[in-house]
Image 1 (tube, rainbow, N blue to C red):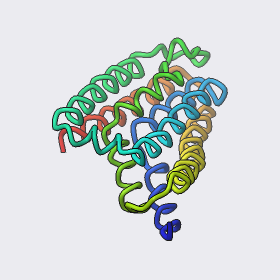
Image 2 (image 1 turned 60 degrees about the vertical axis):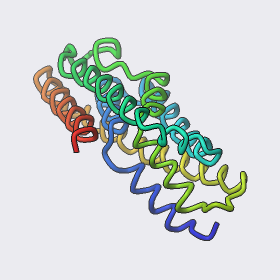
Image 3 (image 1 turned 135 degrees about the vertical axis):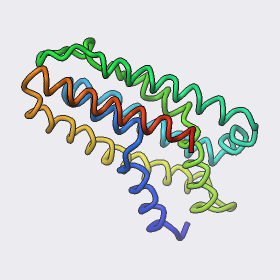
Amino acid sequence: MQQWLPYTLFTLAITFSPGPINLLVMAKAGQSGWRATAPAILAACTTAALTIVLAGLGMASLMISAPLVPILLSWVGVIWLSWMAWRLATAKTTTSASAEQGISLTGLKASGLQLINPKGWMMALTAVTVFAGSDATPTTIATMATVFLCLALLGTSSWALMGISSRRLLTTSSRMRVFNLVMAVALIAVAWWSVLR
């Protein structure tokens, strides 16, 4: 593959931009810290990299070619994200809130969100078709997935670090409440924008 630089820039743009996983990770890290958030980061990034491998095997194009699959996945994702935003907005706001009181973003949930995200599948399909080409070898696809995984870990972790940094400001219940509401509104906006645009 001769397009490693464009592929790397594409991956940086995808993994560092605000999206549902990055916003959820930021909120979780702001509430519960790094240790509670790290499993979700690892699971989400690994699953996203796996979609590139599956796209290289042809699965993404099969899923996206079925007319109802992307629509169904979009609505399932929006409903799930809306529920997560509601949980975030209504979370208890004591400064010693535990992970159970705040947003519940486990590795399994983060991985599941990546699997039902049609935009994630479109990203994987774009990566394989545009940057790897039709003559891509399994080694090329595996390398693309590895590059994506490394950059995704970096990008999503940076969102977690922003959340952790905000903890210094979240020293009162009212500040935590404002943080939760801002993150919930951002999550709702990102989720619904993806299906209504």
